[in-house]
Image (cartoon, rainbow, N blue to C red; front, side):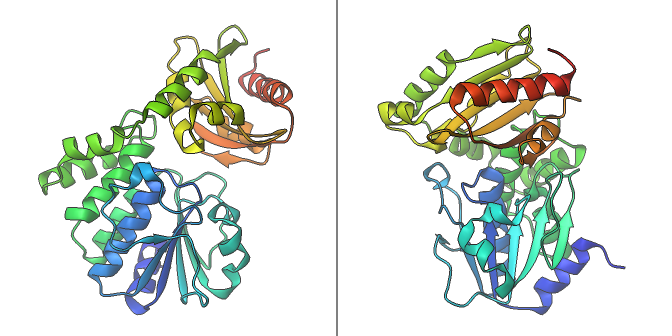
Length: 322
């Protein structure tokens, strides 16, 4: 039986008319992957639409897109929908999830616990980013990984590996970056575009969030929280919380870091980060969430301090500490 890579390549070669979608509130891997897929489809002369339920975040406005990203679904869905970086079907947003039966979904993902919701599934948790999988797809389809395609693959892989500093960095991801660099990718320019996106408002939000950091379980767990009052006070949105947690986990004693972000009264989304063998995906799964071994998240319906306590208890049980 052919590999998922070869089966998906055949689907793309033999068909026309694609919706390319990623999870709502997209990160760099999601944005880079849908844009890269779009460039591949454009190179092959295919018709396609780029879709995200939340639209394109301002911080990724620099991305070299092959077409605009729309947040509105067409009246009639294309025959095929290429879904990237979605650990579950509902992550792509209510509108597309409700209509997934109108199209054939191709599920390309690297999250542990992916439900395999597609008519065709390529799920590989060993991959550092979906962008790396899209690079393999480009190679299989004979599309050179250069120019805007390379820029978007770099955006995807660099952001999901913490610029090649996280534990999910693989030899292959470094080799991919080296290949794109040899082929003309301006990595210094890309790093500047990716990182130089801060506003004064974001700086003020981070100042509050860092001031809210609490240590638990003899300093092995750190938490912080961002409330809607903080967003209102600083003129920011949930987008501005990206990466706060990665700085919190830099504390020397910390094995697991958590951030709780208020969605609405008594409902908090949480993100978890860890190092090495500390499996936060298993912790998130206890609350119906998921993700990766060292990066995961979910949601808790409770007031802030109760939600924090529930999370700390689950982390302590997972780490074998109390």
